[in-house]
Structure formats: structure tokens, C-alpha cells
Length: 114
Image 1: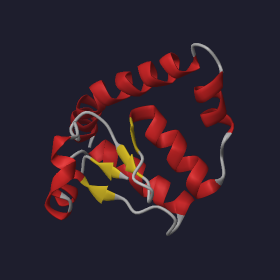
Image 2: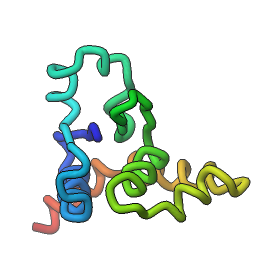
Image 3: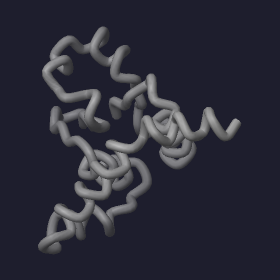
């Protein structure tokens, strides 16, 4: 899973995911991923998380989070809804984008509150 390593919100979320997934998923900050795998430079890494599976499948955003949870923790209900229920994919991606768009603001508000 590639994530924005310069974002406090993202780092906190990844820390929680690491607790849930153990060593079943590798989490790599986007700057390191670009150095390790030059091919990922073409991905919009600053917009969303990206999951690269061993077979090469790449997903991003809400789909990446749901696939990661299925692979690592066998939590598949939300992924099933995402893939099979009309409108759920749109809703999941909309919520993901909403959070992603405001994540830097959340970082700033945490600094002000501290």
C-alpha cells in the first residue's frame, strides 16, 4: 500500500491499518515508493492510496482500502458491496475523496489545537 508519507492524517491511518494487518501488507510512503519502483511515478500518488497486489493488480482510493482489508483481515463485506451493489462504489469513492480533499486541513487543525 502506497500512501502520502508527508501527511499526518495519512500516517495515523496507516499506523492503525498496520495494527490490523500485521505483516500481511507492506505500507510504503509515496516518496520511497517512487525511488524503489520508478514505474509508480505515473500513478497519481498525491491524490489517494494505491494498493499494488503481488499479481500486479493496482487499485486506488476506496477500492484500494477495501481490497487491502479483504486481503489482510478477510473483511470482505464492504468490498462485496463495492463490487456488487449499484451506487455503493460511487458513495464509497465520494466519501474517500471528501476525506482526502480535507486531510491537510485536519493536519492544520490538529497543530492549532495542540
